[in-house]
Structures are given as C-alpha cells and as structure tokens.
Length: 498
Ligand code: ADP
Image 1 (cartoon, rainbow, N blue to C red):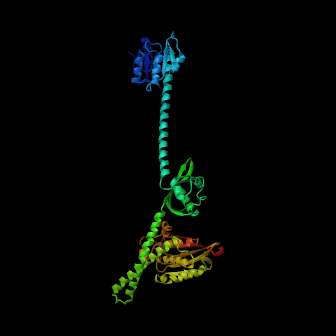
Image 2: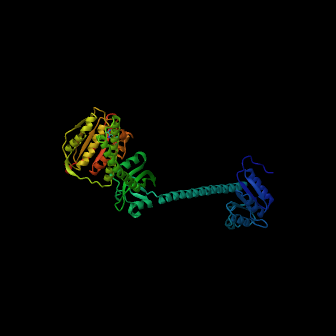
C-alpha cells in the first residue's frame, strides 16, 4: 500500500487514531521517511500492540471513543514495558486540548491537525533523538553502576584477604617509611595497637631493622621493584625479637609510591631447627670421642700391628672422624654464640701480636701446602677477645692456604684508619665468584658443594668468623677475582678510637 523504504527502518512508530484518514496520512508520511509504522484505531488495541512489541514512539489521538488518549497514555506510563516510550498527542483544531493534562499524564509533545508534514517529522525526529540519547545514557549508567559494583566486590575481596591474612602485612610510604595500613596479624606480631602504628615510621617504632638492612631493601626495591624473603629480626613492642622473612613489593596507592611489606614469622621454625642441631650435635659428641679414642689406640699398635693397607684405612677413618668432630664443635660453637651463651671477653691487645700468633699457628699447614706466609709488621691496640680474634684469623689463613696452589703466597696486613683498623688476608688462590661473595658467610655456604669434603672444612668457619666480628662491632667481607685470588677484610674499632 505504502511505498517501502529500501534501507533498514529508522524507528518503529505506533499511530493510534480512530480516524482512518488521519491514520493513512500519518502512516504514509512517516513510511516515506523510512520509519516502520503500525496503525490502530482503538486505544485498547494500541495498548495491546505496545505491550506485545514496544515501539520507539507513539502518536496518540486524544479524542477517541471508549478510551481517550489521556487514559491510553496513563496506562502506557503505568507499565514498565511501555513507560519510557515517548508519546506525542494528536489533537484536532476544534478539540479543546488540555495541554497541562497532556503533559501530566506523561506526554512529551503535541501536534495539532491539520498536519504539516515538516512539523510532524521534526517533532517525531526530535523525540526519537531525545529518546535514543536517553537510552544511551541509561545504558551507560547501568554499565557504570555494574562496573562500580564489580570494583567494590573486587576491592572487598582484597580488603578481606588483607584483613584476614595469617601473614602480617603492612603498607608503608616509600620515601618517609610511614605506616598507612596494617592488618591484624601485623598488630599481633608487633604488639602495637593500630593508633600506635598508623602515621608512624619504621624508625619511630624501633622495629629492629638496621640502617644497613634498610639501605639494602631500598636499593633492591629501586633496582627490581621487589625483594623476596630477606631474613630480619623484628623487634616487638615488648622488646622481644621475632625472626621473620620479609618480602617487599613497590605499589602505587592513590598516586603515591608505597611499599607492600609481607612478613613470614619463622621464629618457631628457627628455634626448632637450632634445638635439633644442638641436640644432634650433643648426641654425636659422646660416640665421637669414644671413636677417636679407639682409632688412636689402633694407631699406637698396642692392639697388634696393622698391615700397610690397614694403616691407610685407619688414616682415612681418622681424618674423617676429625672432620666430623670439627663439624660438631663448630655447630655447637656457632649455636652458642648466636644464642648469646658465649660472651666475648674483651681485653686490650695488640693486633700485630695477634697476627704473628695466628701465622705461627698456621705455619705448619702452610709448609705442608708449600705456601709462603707473609706477615706485614703492624702495631695498634684494640679492645677484643684475643682467643676469638685468633680463631677468626686462623680460619681465614686456613682457607687462604686451602684454596691456593703450592708455591703461592698469603699476606696478612693491617691498615690504620681514624677510628678503626682494617685487617686483610690476601691469597693468590682460585678466587670466589662474585655471586658467592655474600653467601659464603652463611652456614654451610660454599662455592662448591664438594669443598668441605675435598678440603676437610665444615662450611661453618666464615659464619663463625662473621659472628665473632659482629660481636666486636666490626665488619667482615670478601673481595675476589676468579683465578687470581681473594682478599678477606675485617674492620675492628680501635681502642679509644686512637
Ligand atoms: P670451609 O670449612 O668449607 O672452608 P668456610 O665457611 O670457612 O668453610 O668457607 C666457606 C666456603 O667459602 C669454602 O668452602 C670455599 O668454597 C669458600 N672460600 C672461603 N675462603 C676462600 C678463599 N680464600 N678462596 C676461595 N674460596 C674460599
């Protein structure tokens, strides 16, 4: 009947008018413009049609028998499915158009007959545009609300995980180190209340993290953005120390660079570990002493002469037992030092004398290994436990000899600084790879797993040395060039800083 547009219909329009001529006129006018038009002559039919397939816009005649336009509009507005459809009223010239009523019942506009094509199209288009913008806004609103809900849910999930995590967690600002958020596990381990922590810094609370540890953490954070499992001693409010593994990560919070600190309390694990080591070592001591005695007896020949092969086997057994004995003694030594059971006995002593004593003690070993031991003369007074400093020096000289080739030289020298002195034990041995320079000072930290077996060591010597030096408020470290040699340095404070 009407000319069919070629493109996809622009919008669906429902025309409700009891005058067939009006219907025809409107429908053809709109169809021509590309709209899809449905026409009905009764209000009730219009309502049914709108419910069945909601149009984008309704043109509604006011004066109709049975149900007038106002009533139809009211019904449309009362149903969720049709309430948002814009309704434009149509009124005849001689109708008394109650404009106020038209708007009150929910109409958006009105057109008076006779129709002017441009006016009808302009109003229809306007309201379709407004409706489409409204729809877009509603959709965007719904989407935004959905996003807000999802974000809130995600935040809630993380907040819950943060709050109820069994691991102590704290968020601090990167630059000032102020606490801005901590969870209840952190309050529990530290012994502080939330008010005592928030807004205060790690330094304010004296949490036991040394300036060196802090500097180390800072450097790693700036280099790589994170740091894993750094062992530190955390000082709690009551003054007790907890051993924790600290992992840190750089995060951005409200445009501020912050640090996420996650702690893992290993105090109990460490205690059990130490208890176990000390128990096993003590239990080993008695049978070891008896074994050494028995082997010595065998060696004296009092129980009969051994064959050459027998003597060789006895020598191997003796050297292994001696190594085991050293290991047990070193473990116990370290264990007692760490738990503070061995206190240093500081006396004023001359470092030059200690170097000579240490060299003398190691002279026999050096000769056996054809190593030249050179002590450069020095004299300076330090306040130290001489036995423990000797133990440290002999360990370093022993290592220097062990890891050198026959014909090499080991030097012992001292450099004086304003308030401290620096001892150097230098060798021309195989050297230590850079990545091992720190770990060799850990318990059983070795360059090669076979070092202790091949060289008769225990892997505990440097850990003991570090402990002794630290108890003297000093520092120990190594520098090395692979294949060329190593230098071990010790810094000790001078007596009276003189
Ligand atoms: P060990 O009883 O094995 O010597 P230490 O704790 O004294 O135990 O030393 C740990 C490890 O460090 C050694 O096993 C060795 O791998 C390395 N090391 C120590 N001193 C030297 C050195 N002067 N030259 C090369 N490697 C060394």
